[in-house]
Structure formats: structure tokens, C-alpha cells
Image (cartoon, rainbow, N blue to C red; front, side, top):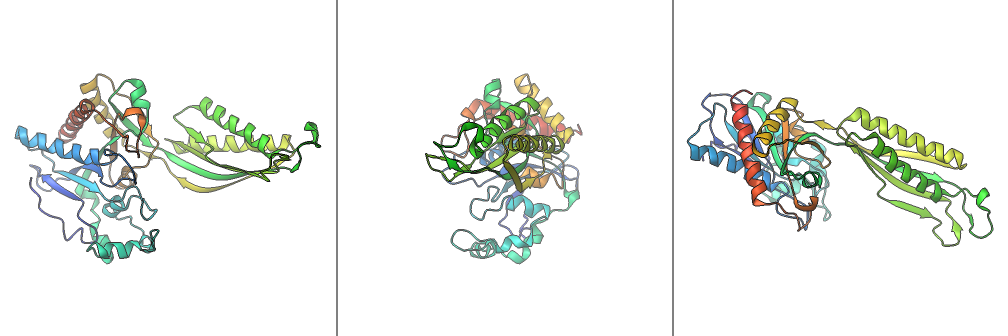
Length: 367
């Protein structure tokens, strides 16, 4: 494979991509293929890494056929997409988009080692991270192949699916405040039970989210009850709400509906309700033209194309801020990911590489 080198440009990061196939048209922007190379602790073998290997297989197939496209193809293997060590994500992809916050260098791991210190220990220069950034005109499109990390494709009996968007998310700390009392002496009609209110709201969260549809999901993931004694009426309940969806406006509308429902429940029960948002990330729409290219390629190899959102974050979030981006999902057994049981089949991967190759050829042909 031809690799002209990128050491000067990537002096601030360990080199994470190469150009294995030059294009016939000199100076034409490249098609970027790949994913991330890192994963979480005690994980499987396919999250991220399958996408990098599949990109290599696409280029290997072109070499075997003796084909040289008009556009160059570059393969990327991003570092630290997961954020396992430092708690910050998309370090590699933020590097090539030039959106690496300077404050990240001071972020420390559990042992107190900063990102800057870790880079120096790895032989890198933190002061030169900006050299990793690519110019907008250098890349035409980004395609990422990734395991689904969910059960939808398996339930549909399909090996492949096309991602419509990477879900946006909102996370809130919520609280129902009532009045603690003796479990034996306070009549049911006089109680201000914070846990009963929270339970009622949790059922409504589930029901309303299902009714609204639109691939939105909502989860109450933690709950703490005080005073927390078997013979005391709960006077205070704190709980978290996590909602996600592929489009921001409907997601915010759902959040507004759920919070109004909580206020109504609290008012009817003569309690107080409060909520504070502590995390928000916008939805990232995949490029519609690239979605169509991938959908046609998927339909050609499996007879049907399914569009679905991604509930997990990906490097495409960062890349989509600079270049048209899209993702191809591959079925994984049981929807299991971030676990040693993570599994794909050779047949599914073969279909994925076939679809991936078709999409690259279609892009090069100007579709």
C-alpha cells in the first residue's frame, strides 16, 4: 500500500491514518474510511476495530481488482473515542477536525496523570496538536462501519442497516419532595408520599415516550429514597432522567411533556417537584446524500435497507462538523457490546464489506 506519510501534520498525535490508495485525479479530496481502535475495559473485539479492518478490506479488494479510483481513499483508526482513561471522548477525531479544546490537556486520569503528561510519555508533543487538523477541502466524505451495539437489526432479521442520526441526549437530576411520616399512623388520604409520586411518574415516562415514538427513548436509571426505613413514609426521592432521540426538536418537546407531567403529579399529591439538567448533546444527523448511497448499496447486497438511529456516540459526531458523514451498522449477536460476549458472524461482515465497497465506488462515480 502507498503511504506518503503524515508525520509533520500529526506531530501532536500518534499517526492514526494513512492513504493506501491514491486517486487518479491529483489534488482531489479523499474519501475517508474507518472508525476507532480503542474500546472499554473488559470489552469485546469488534466495537470500533471492525470498522478499521473493514476499511482496509475495501481498499485491499480494489487493489486485487487493479482498480484505481478518481478520488484517493484514506483509512483512519481514531484513538480514544471511548474516553475510558480521561473521561473525555473523541480525542482522535477532534484532533483531525481541529476542535480539540486546550483544556483537555489538563484533564487527569485516576492516577493524576494529565493528558499532556501521557502524550509526552508516549513520545508526542502536546503543543503541536493543532498540526493534526485537516483542511476542509482535503476530505470529500467520511464513511464509518460499526457494529450496531443494539438489538434492532437482529430483531428485523437483517445483517446491515443505515444510520439516520446519532441520538442527541438530555440528562437531568430530578426530585420529588413530600413529607415523611409514620407508616402506621398516617392515613392513606393524608400522605405526601414522594416515592409513590416518583413511581407514578416513572410509569408515565415509559408510556408517553412509547406513545410519541420517533425512535426516542427515556430511562430513569437511578433512584434514592429518604429516609429509607421500612416503617417511614418516603419524604424525599431523587432520581435521574436520561432521554435520547435522533432529532433535537421532538426530543425537547418530549422532555417538556415529561416535566409537565411530573409537575402535575406533584401538584395533585401536594408535593414539590424540581429538575436540573446536567448534560446535553445535540443530535448529529447523517448526511442525506451519503445515507442514500449506503441504502442503495445495502439494498443491493441484502435485498432491503433499514434506517435506524444510533443510541451510542461515535467519531462521526466530530467528523460531521467538518465533512459529510454517514454510518453503516452491522448486526451483533443479542445486541451485546462493551462486553466479552460481543459477537458478529463472518457472513454478516462479508455482506458489510460488499456494501461498503459498493458505496465507495458509487461516491467515486459522483453519485
